[in-house]
Amino acid sequence: MSLLGEAMSGLGAALLPVAAALLFEELTFGGLVRLLLAPWPGAGKDGAPRGGLSPRCGRKEHNHISGGGK
Image 1 (cartoon, one colour):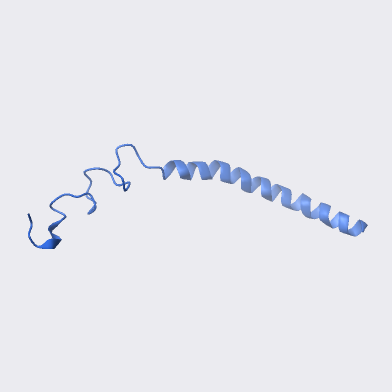
Image 2 (tube, rainbow, N blue to C red):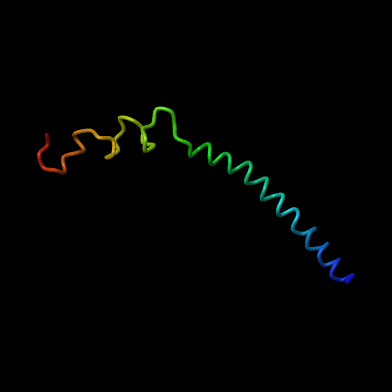
């Protein structure tokens, strides 16, 4: 039984720094990634900047697929 206790203690001592490092990394870099991927002010609903060259922006030059070119 003493061997099992020592094994659990050793395993806990090895895993505690790993768990603490993962938590620290998630709190720091996870927050930075969330901040960088957040929608920018002035962006449209889909996240593309308004008036950009995205084909989803709704400008008539981009909507010539129908053939009418209205």
